[in-house]
Length: 439
Image (cartoon, rainbow, N blue to C red; front, side, top):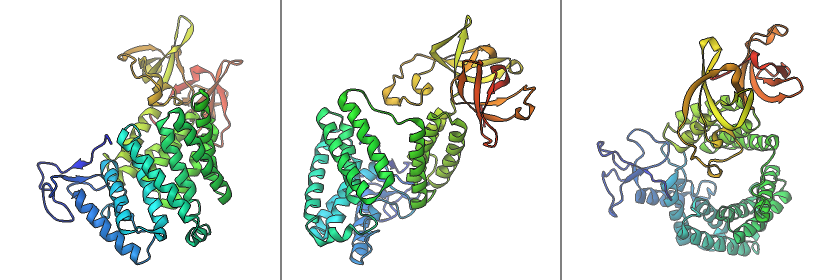
């Protein structure tokens, strides 16, 4: 893992909330914290967290509370939020060790495969040791499932609401191999994704089927050498909306899983050129994440980074009467009573094109320049938020805001979809549109 847990500040007398001791533990490891606790609270020795989690898990499991039997390995009991980064990585390993030591046996098969799956998703496939560990975990998972299938416990579990458990496990195995990306790993990824799809179809998990089918098609495209297939924008936005609604219902709006799903939904809306909707959603998600998790939490930073991308007003410039689409610029503000516009650039394609992920685009584009151009020479890219102004035949639309989603070559006008859904999309001349820099 490349991320590290937050360590106790040297200038504060922070202490472990479990053992109440300051400084290093007996093994020389410092106090850490990587959850949503803030201030001087929430710091603990990783060894103390593990001891606490094992004790609480034994109590819960022996009392028959299956749902919360391992929650202390995942969720901080103080802020009630998931551990993340290095702390989560270490706790997932400790969780496997704990179950293998204290809950061995066929009767604990579901508990065991659950912790193996949790550990698998934490591994970094770029690390050779983690890849080797992943292969071992998968072997253990598959052999445990085979044993479970011969027991009444497994057959009874098929009647339980969590009957798709094996499907999710296979999906995570497929994701592990998919991230490795070699030809052999891609074939394995496709195999396990297909197993997951078959289980989701059998159990009627519509969202699971939709998600897995997209992953299978992506893998098939990569195997054939065509690169990763991308969903059409409308289908992707619909899928992300279903996930966001499901997570909101299951985990609540404050949960980091829900917030991250919301960010993915916002990015999908942005790709569909529904920028205003995406920006407003991100503003709500950031406010929630900041309140619940704090500004430095990964969840908050993820949402802030997404908002920065969505708020970039990308434009092309008209020079000598021709539009140069090889260079993309960022519009910053209007000057001279709106007759001129300050632009910066050229900027990386990753900022311009939402369909290109950071890992797929080169960031080496040189330093941005800043200069002023005539407003008439600034050509907005699709998805740019705009406000109508100076309309004579449709005065009721002046001041209305919307997204510029297309250009009609026949009329030479821009198609605007308004935020007010009671208004129909209209075609507007460039001279009657202004870029909306702030919502």
